[in-house]
Image 1 (cartoon, rainbow, N blue to C red):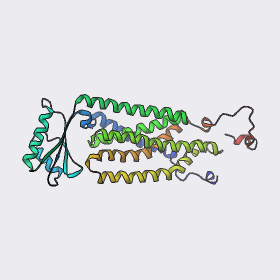
Image 2 (spheres, helix red, strand yellow):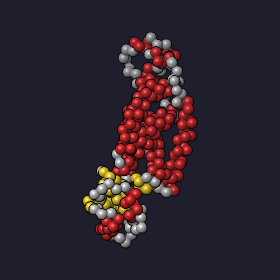
Image 3 (cartoon, rainbow, N blue to C red):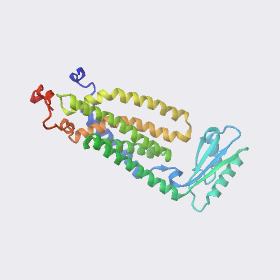
Image 4 (spheres, helix red, strand yellow):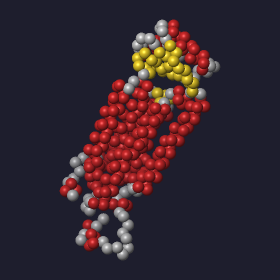
Length: 319
């Protein structure tokens, strides 16, 4: 094919050390924040009380926060739920205070500040359920990574599998680090976005790995780095188009979806960006650093089978 005679337009793998340095700095920042202050876990994980109220007229979140400011519920999370007349209040557990008492006192504070407040719903999440969700969430992440490792190792080669898992771990840590640094609430919707990012990033890595394997079998000349660079460039347009269209939807969720799914949308935004980056600078570069080569993906020759194509190729040009 004529494209094989051309050098890659962008030398991604030639700049892999710069990518490693950037990723290392971001990972250290993320891990440092996670170790120092952890995640701002929502009541899905910590337990607590969820109170939904309705107003006759539209109300601002700041007005509701002001109504609770002079009480022990000043740190409660307040956000719109559905419309500007519906408010959702999340209250973390308070030592020595019954959950039923929490909802009654919150509702009393709101009725003192505004008239026509209606109590729509009260839900309680116990600490035991929060611990189970935390354990199951971590287990889901570990099983997803283990499944990726086995699948890619079987589908391609173990060094591609290590590169893919390294890229996924890179993406997960950066998302968690972002939520730790910004103190945004980490709840079940954000965990769902992290799991969705694993699938998105893996799909991108698989596409690149598949093109690398295909070019290893087609391109008879050129170093491993050249062929991998060529493969990344050939899939670059597909990566950019997919990422751009996904980001359009994610941005719409961020600006139009409301507070209730903002954490989910922000996590997806970070995941799409770092997932596209890691499939090039982490997954492919890690496989190259581990020494993957053409010979690792060559199909075994069948004994006694006629191979007329090999007869026309000089020995020095064979794989």
